[in-house]
Amino acid sequence: MLTIGLLYFNLALGAVAALTLMILRIGALVGDCPQNRERAHAIAVTIATGFAAIGAGGVILIGAVLPMLPEAPYAALMLALGFAALCLGLGFTHAMGMLRAAMIQPASAQG
Image 1 (cartoon, rainbow, N blue to C red):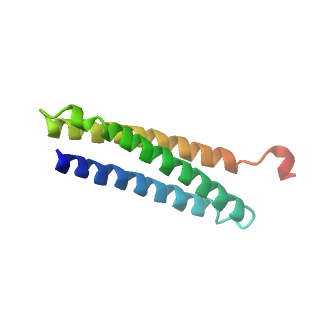
Image 2 (image 1 turned 180 degrees about the vertical axis):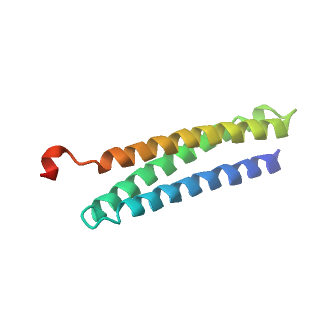
């Protein structure tokens, strides 16, 4: 069971790290405009930090269920990885929506 747990945590936390880096890179791409550079980087770092914290917490919570299924460890691993991927994907989608919404300036600030 230790091997299954280590495999799960390595894969799931690797996914959290990869998606966090994607948020930072997308924020850097949005920040290519000189007018919004500092704002975009600050927003991207804030959103990426929140995503990483919540994502890691979710991975730990899902991983806590693994020992409850000792009779089918590989099935538990696949279910846990699938659920973690689903949750992280939804969180990433929400993070991208927040980045987009935060970069839209109100009409009064554009003029």
